[in-house]
Length: 514
Ligand code: TEU
Ligand code: CA
Image (tube, rainbow, N blue to C red):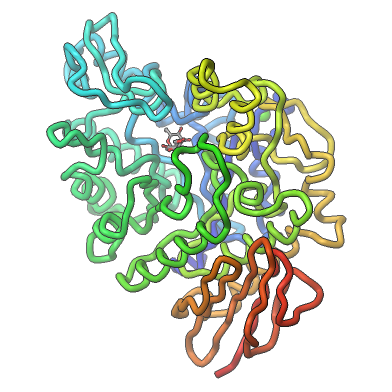
């Protein structure tokens, strides 16, 4: 298997909603197994599987009650072993989710801890009274009272997700065991959930990014005999943190997810829509900064926590095909490791639902009820429709037929589904296929220098160059743009005709032998 960093093209599988093999309405491991041909047709060579571990499901599997076994809905240990083997056989590298900042309160560690049993006593953060006013990401105080122990514990997310105490050596050892276990099962690495939050600094009032962060990560992944790919989810990452955690000399992470280019509003439910220009100009700055520092960045626009990029940054009605293919080109021609998210390759859009029942995510529900007196119902639903996490979590629409599902299906499933896309003249999937194969073929796209030559309110142009070859990627935003002549032969475009006047969301790739 070709495991060189620069050749990786990831596809994130939200297992709960990718493919349901037994018709119970929940995606599962056997479902993923049945879609390997689809992944191969797309051409990706690595997958990230979201949590499939035992969990009460208060935060869709990110509240784990046993790191070593599968949730019954997901399948069995033998299913995951078979899946990893089959993916490997097909040349696909596999990373699994490692949720190390918190466990479910249903985890036996928490049960033992609330009873102050043995070594578990200090596995979590316990206080007689809350020591600060930290807030939970999902709303309200981050401190909850536990009757059994008669103390408060920290939960940065849902009340049922208690933060574990990484300052405790035994906790660190527990996670080393978890890492070893999944590597032994064949996983090639980990996507590490909110990894910047594992090191707290109570004195400085920082619920994350504490002074021991680097040491904890290095201790976890750079032990004797451990060698794996790691990507840390770090919402707080700036270039300094990225340097500290992902520079090869630092022996910490392979790469991280920085959200700077995606955090353009004041919170996910804020009013208004960011522009493609805002997003891409930050992406461009991040490219230049990371390249200069010798880091390997990730490139992504969607995941299971984000709304659909076509709806968020572009036009999901009149120009849906053009928008989706333009974003695809941005994903696959930049420097770094691209992470595609399921459904992005067919241009899935946000989904409208008339009641909050259509958006059961804990974060959306929290927003909906907490703003009851401040915003009208229609406005609250509109905000959730634009920014909510359920947009990425609905069952992958393989055909127009709506199946039984744990979450209401995409509202436009009849119009946007895998089969329809394949049958269509303008197939987003086929454009992605072309991009993926181009990325595999053209060394300059993976290893070449990145130079931004134009970034205006209406257009973006950049080049990738190495070994006497240059690819120029030019695109226009929502209004179209007139661009100066670009040298080279056109190798890909999402419009039939290309002149100096670019149409809305037009993207063109030019290749030049120098
Ligand atoms: O996400 C981290 C996280 O903080 C996001 O959920 C986001 O910042 C939040 O929605 C703010 O608007 C990870 C997982 O990807 C997510 O699914 C989990 O809910 C969360 O951690 C807790 O494990
Ligand atoms: Ca199922």
